Length: 493
Image 1 (cartoon, rainbow, N blue to C red):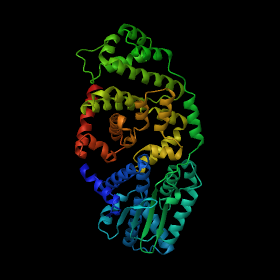
Image 2: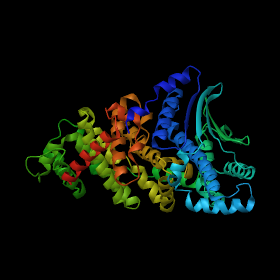
Image 3: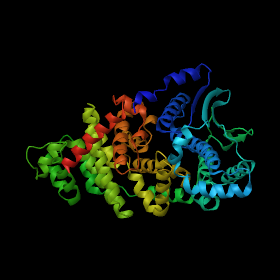
Image 4: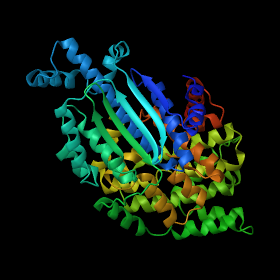
């Protein structure tokens, strides 16, 4: 699939002229969803609300998938010879529909494509903001609409998704979870629950969402969020020898011999320095086993990256549970980021992106240590519902994402701004300041490639604007780049 298909500047120009954008389709495939995501990105950037992109993408996906399910349900009942308006036949049909179709919408894709049942998405400017209307040409039954509106009203009472889940989940249609998710996202993002309405005129169902010109975010406060913030505020400073080494790296009079002796005090630090100096990124002519040679090979900027990472790890491993899997992921992300920076001839930020890769998931360690059951549950929902990033579910369930936790830690330890921003935005590169855009984009790409390998993400999750910046104009080209990086990493390992 070519990424040029996702270009949406023409749609934005049309919208700016006051004309509505209309996209009609029978089935919400990847191409349609990526096109819509790209349009939303440009609209939100224009409104200076780009930080809401993942929220809006998640909300609209839920709305569109529910519209597709409604159409699929009509087809299913017709083919089964069941009267959807008959209460007994409705119950029988819904039991079968839930088992055979819900969660497996792909199974009925061909029938949707060959049916007269469409979904129409219209985006237009209004005096109050941007109005998004999703219409499907099947009516919703009065009892279904009543049940949906009751769920929406109930969901408004909660700030914490986890506490609402058990009480509100309704398995009769499998849509209860989506409605709770949409309502809480609207509430906690500041868009507002009143901006979302569902109506039916007897022949079609219409869902409207208004993105207002003014966003009034509500502060989410949960017990877990308070606990996490207290834990971050209570983190100790870096070990004394790490701080001394950092000062020595900034001191032009400090000798390599003095720095090397200080490194040798810490076995873990010594191991990391030697490991990096012998990695494929530096291509040493012979195996380096001397710390002084290793320091000369990697340079003081890369040494500082190892100092920060080792210091952070020593504190977090001692205070919280040890998460070897997260550190391994960070190491791979750092390698991928360094490779990408060199590949795209961004030599000035090679050390910065390497450091950002090493530390981008700091917040996840604190989050997992606080409530492992909850984070596992979040991960399951993210995967099942194809949500682009776990930060959405973290923010709704807990009131804070692992990216934000990482930012709090970075500020607590007075990390440089480029690093703090890279940690905060490694899932949201479109929100980056111009001066940090490349390093955040590279960290984002490296992390996404690692996510693809664990099946957490797919290639179509990648932000089209980021790919375009580096001349990646097709999914095939993206896959080829990934294969090249993975092969280099395997060779190095």
